[in-house]
Amino acid sequence: MSGQQHERGNGSQIFQPLAGDDPATIAGYRIAAKLGAGGMGKVYLSYTPGGRPVAIKVIRPEFGEDPEFRRRFAQEVQSAQRVQGLFTAPVIDADTKGAQPWLATAYVPGPSLADAVVAHGALPVQAVLLLIAGMAEALHVIHGAGIVHRDLKPSNVLLAADGPRVIDFGIAYAADATSLTGSGVTIGTPSFMAPEQAAGRKVTPATDIFALGQVAAYAATGSPAFGEGTSHGVLYRIVHEEPDLTGVPDRLTELVNRCLTKDPAGRPSIAEIIELCRTANAETVLRRPEDWLPAPVAADITVRAAAPAPVQTPPPPAAAPNTAPGVAYSPTAPASPAAQAPATPPPGFGPPQQPYRAPQPHYPTHPAGPQGHAYAPTQQPSHAQAYPGGGHTVPGSMNQAPAPKKSAGRRGLLIALAAALVFGIAGGGTAYLLTKDDDKQTQGGSSPQGGQEKGASGTPGPDAEPADTSDDTAGDTSDDKPDPEPDEYKGINLTAGYHLTLADEDVRPLEGEDAGYELAYDTGGYLDAESTDGKLVLLDPSQEGSLAACRADTRFAETIPTEKLSKGRQVCVITGTGHMGLVTVQGFSTEDSPSKYMTLDLTVWRNAAG
Figure 1 (cartoon, rainbow, N blue to C red):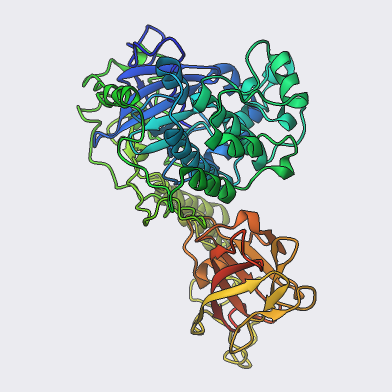
Figure 2 (cartoon, helix red, strand yellow):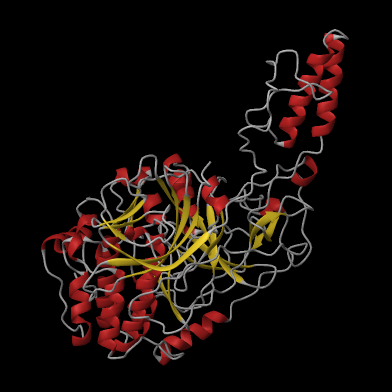
């Protein structure tokens, strides 16, 4: 989602100098150069205080003026920040509410596939297989976050030394919402659209699979599978005609043909694509050597790695329209009048940043084991936090909580004095309650659940009902009650059409999927909470599964499609009988398996639902 691609023909000038209408800083990020411009906006190069290069895409003003675009853009940024794959450029910072929205991703020092093919010609078969396998893994993670790319094309694939990077996922969905679509502007690139997309029908993850086949054909031949020309002509051929695969090597024919199936239901899954790449590679597993790209393309990577540094002293904030402090994507404390005054931060962006802790990624695994080794996540750059000396921001902690207002205690005191003067001695109790309420609002607290208002001495207030003091300990279900000890069940192979009962001491699959069961693997392809009042919650990849997390999360569902589950995803199970469980997905049966099953680990807390 970084937009780090360059316009064709601009390859000789990778790092373009800033023009008069380009900002010197964006929300505290000092701009070093312009990387390019496209239909959605301009892309700039900057750095974190630690020296990590980042690419910042500033959205075009006409998109930012559309409220529906902003809503969808914020939604896509939230989803994209959960994407932590080896073959994507992660979104690390964003502002979806400012005058001109922007987002920042890790900078990838490599040409786009489009630039590489234009400059050096088609890629060899071995490189294409590794390219498509890496892109398939990227789509697995993107789809797992609930995103359909919609604009997968050669200019949205960057070629890095250690593999491809898929970028710009989700922006096309937000752009679909703008008024520009009402003026005949097509969102997406016609040569790489799917038939259902060109015909205006429903877009699904299978839409990206069709585009993946088109990218494979382009990388192997240097030409789009459905030719070039006017948009209407290309779209007609995509919907009604077969692709021209002349020049596609035999080893790639099956892969490309299956991806370019007109019917979305007939296209291969991500796991099947990985297997097709492995089979065509004639190896047991796919291994990516350091020199997986041709030498001329690798030389382009070296050039892009020598990125220029930003100037140390930016001009005053009034020198450019975007030098005003950006609104951080996650909530930040309201700026005080002193903080709003223009100030120039010292060289190096100011004070040291707080360490950014990226969400723990869950990388995809496939039956073929495409990489043949364990994944190791890389450290991601930081987000933005308010610069204490002025209105600028510097990269830092994204989840920083708002600072409490210093005037809160003073305001509470003034309210208390005013209340005392108005109500006098006779209304002293009322004044106390007013000040207490204000104090609770200041601290963000609330009264205990099910509790009563109490006066200064801890006794019930004048309007409170008499308390029942018959037996305070009877039926006690307070938080003092210890949590039940968990029971662990590892490596359960739950076959489709079978179920699990959490109350069983020895939890094992039992036949049946439609009854009062607590957790069933339905043959229709989803997990099902069958029992009365049973609920499921699909935790986000960044959430750590625990009893506390399952108790707190209320995104209840009765069924969860298995297509939303990948290795490492966790599902909370709340039964109608009061038990709670945590399912950790470990994998699914392979295509050649005689039975359809999923492998999972299960943690059970009995009588924990309350």
